[in-house]
Amino acid sequence: MDNHDFSNIGQQIKSMVQDAINTMDFKKLNQDIGSTVNSALNELREGIKSAGQGARPEAQRPKEPPAKAAPPPPVARSQAYINPKPSGSVSGVLCIVFGAIGLGLAGIALAVSAIVGAVNNSLAALGGTALGYIAPLAVLCGCLMTRGVYLRKRVARFRQYTRQLRGRTYCQLKELADHLGKSVKYVAKDVRKMIRLGMFPEGRLDDQQSCLMLDNETYQQYLSAQEAHRQQKMAQAKEEQAVLSPEDRAVIEEGRRYITQIREMNDAIPGEEVSAQLEQLEMVTSKIFSHVERHPKQIPEIRKFMSYYLPTTLKLVKAYREFDSQPIAGETISSAKEEIQNTLDTINLAFVKLLDSLFEDAAFDISTDITVLQTMLAQEGLTKKDFG
Image (tube, rainbow, N blue to C red):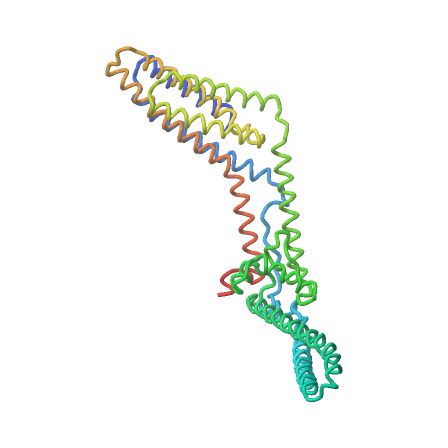
């Protein structure tokens, strides 16, 4: 939208309002302003969208993911990163077997010692000495057997984890925890131990300890995503900290002066309904200026729009306050006040639409990122429908 178009709009609006105030005929004002506002908003939206798409760096624009060879069957993918002989599968059995044998022999030895001591008192001292050696041995064998049971239980949990993966190379720990009936904290500690023992040779947990990744490729993708997120946050912070030019700062300060004047007018108007309208207008316009202050590149798109509609709103509010202050309100004044309130509804709706338009470009970026991510996951066979 060029300057000439906005000048025409501004002159049209000023003429509409002034004629309505001069003639006290506000009947067509709401309709005429509504039509003009909607037309301006439509052109403004196109301008914001075009500016956002044109300014987006080529590297950030969505690209078609490169064609990839068909991935191997899901089970083959995960099994390649799972140790077929997990730690404890053999040693656990051996600990149980030797611990049980040791306990059995110790029990026999203790029984023999007790019998010998009872039959021959002269050998009681010898039996006591034997008991001193056999009892610690029995305790050692009991510990060995307990260790074996622990190892076997860990192997059993490992098997449950691998089954729950169902061929995937990544999985949320909450899913594993729900499957086992354990807490996420317990599963995170359990999985970290298994990774250290080489049960998941290339296994990694994310920074939040919430996701298990089996292979280096998935982990590198995670790191890339983290780096992209970090860069995005840095860029956003840099943009938010951008120093406004004197011209942009003047636009924002002028807009806030109008907001202050409208608030003062509102304080002087006792009517609850019109006060609620003006409070909403103040809230929405404050959000608009706060947003463009953090995103200065959008200020040129709203400068002309706001410079025409805020003064118009202020003039209408002044007219309403003047009518409202009259001691006797005839039919003409009452009708004029009602039409002004209807027009304020229209302007409020226009400002809400403007605020929404300012966020359209950011929403478009997010939607694009989600689409690209979903496409990549689908090519890897990692979407929900692939596990149905």
